[in-house]
Image (tube, rainbow, N blue to C red; front, side, top):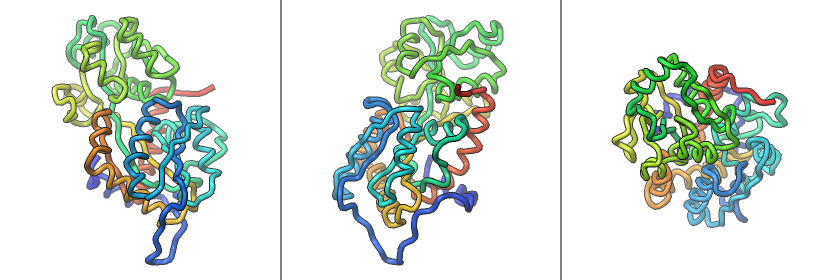
Length: 326
């Protein structure tokens, strides 16, 4: 998503959205100790990896180390609550995913925090699409062929998902909804074990984040039929967009930075500027693209508008998918 695509969203930011604490004109901010990026998922995962890439990329500009702290549990809710309760001084931020900050708000009742009231958006870091991939033994080589096969034998194809409300689940459910087909969805505790079963042939297909499957595609362990982006990816230009065969279909998830509500506006603005600078060019952007992400680096206002539009979109995805938690 380019910055020009974010700007029209500024008009829809709700007045209830948490704001950074105003500061006198001309004031500035610099951290006086290490800044913490809190991640709600285990080390080595896609969110953790991205957090470390961005943290390294902005450390020099901030003049203080940016350290990643993993606080796992409750699908990211443990980390989110921790940051909501942290001092709003610019030194603690949560690296939020669509799942941890938007999906959880739609799935969980009685959360001990409010994603709008208790946080101020800092920067949209990156967008992430999925790839529709199949085991090489499946005799389909296009989205159209997959749809035809699924319509001929409803429920015969096994589709792996990384649990209810995951990107894999949403992308697959939206495809079923748009194409009028039905897969047998097989739920796993994470994307890695699902991918292992796809590679081994126990599954027929998956919709899986690019960052988690690009190496398997390049090595020929799985066959990519399409990307869930609206258009083809520069990194995988030979893989068509699913929308080329299924008009109107698109699915992306995202990663972004949020600070506790009340964080001084100069602190929010300074961190956002450093993130945008790191993602604009150079090794940080290159590494993000190698991982399969589309780097963004937005202003706080742009991210606030984006997030305001995401909440109803994700709520609709929850409805379509039937996702629920016990």
